[in-house]
Image (tube, rainbow, N blue to C red; front, side, top):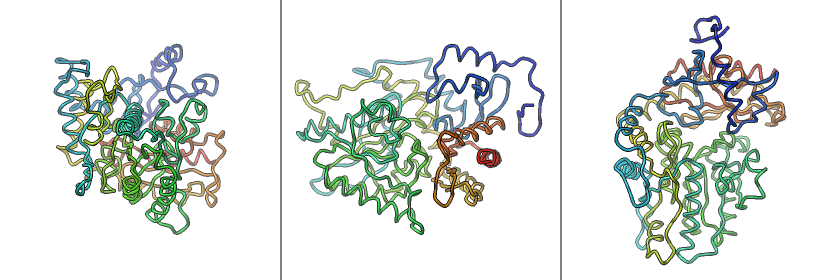
Amino acid sequence: MIRDDHSKMTAPPPSDRNASLRERDLAAIWHPCTQMRDHAGSDALPMTPIVRGDGAWLVDANGRRYLDAVSSWWTNIFGHANPRIAAAVKDQLDTLEHVIFAGFTHVPAIELAEQLLRIAPRAQPPQRGEKDPTLARVFFADNGSSAVEVALKMSFHYWRNVGKTGKTRFVALTGSYHGETLGALSVTDVPLYRATYAPLLHEPIFVASPDCFERAPGESWREHSLRRLDDMRTALERHAHEVCAVIVEPLVQCAGGMRMYDAAYLTGLRKLCDGFGVHLIADEIAVGFGRTGTLFACEQAGMAPDFMCLSKGLTGGFMPLSAVLTTQPVYDAFYAAYATGKAFLHSHSYTGNPLACRAALATLAIFRDEPVLERNRELAACMGQRLSPLADHPHVAEVRQTGMIAAVELVRDKAAHAPFPAAERRGLRVYRHGLERGVLLRPLGDVIYFMPPYVVRPEEIDLMVDVTIEGIEKAVA
């Protein structure tokens, strides 16, 4: 029997349209982040063909609905088929679909850049003789990994342009994830993604993460995060002369297991980077646009980075687009006669795509016109309240939350924080159960997390949590 509205059971449809689409898919497509064999054989996990979206829900070819508890890889913030964003894209289709962005420009990109700079985190005004740290320029790219590539290359190239050619390395945090192109993967510390390609990668300086899951008994998030600044200080004392930038995911290390830390770390890190003369790159690709409780996570630390990478929620999940915001001093280091060779020649064919820019403008308009952050605080409180009883579960090491991101960490031994053997794939059991009950949960290993669209309703949060609790009981049985 198939549950389609979570209140009644219906008979299977006479013709299974899902099956036909699965067969065609498996004959032609290689899916991302997937062992394709999982979708074949007697114990296969069936592919789910989706034909339309409706707010926080996805609908398959047989008409069955799934609550999208992960915002389709953290992108969809205002609901699937959001009419306001859709109307903006449709309007743009009638005027300009794309134009080369070298030597040409267009109104959607200009307006988007202006608005991003207007809402970006503000830096403290510079002291006399200091360079202005305000984010003042926007460089567009196609996706999150591309944005990280831009920031890394731009930082390296900046130091070269100002004559400090010895600066060639980057500092990243353990447990970090910044993307899967080679530069972004170089500053990633998740073995699942990095290990195979290690011979191809540059070697960064990894510094212990402020991840508060590792805090000592009785130690607060703030105390632990501040203590971990000592590790960063030591690394910069040794390596600042060869370091271009420190790159971090502000407040939440998402793909590394939704590991979280206190904003005090970012405040201290900004001071360290200033003191040692290195850039600070904030990868806000996953945490930007309201996920952590403020529009940007850096706001909670009262600071602005030298580079801020944005994507995912930027277009409300409608179109691929990313942006790197940087400062006027960085821009000025590239502004010279062509013959000097100082130009930043990085490019993408679809840089500044007008359709994507219109989607982004419509997304920002929703933030401007509606009390999004206020509603999110209410929804986050609802998630926290519903999840709190799981903290006492014998196989839950921690329930943690930052704004509209919540995570439940499953373990074999609660007292020792000892994980289940990875080969047992306990999280996959939760995922399977979620699909059976009409909820899309996609755990990171044995970390079950929630990053729902901001249009989710309290009763849908109830469903999410109830199904998760059921799935955990099955997974640890």
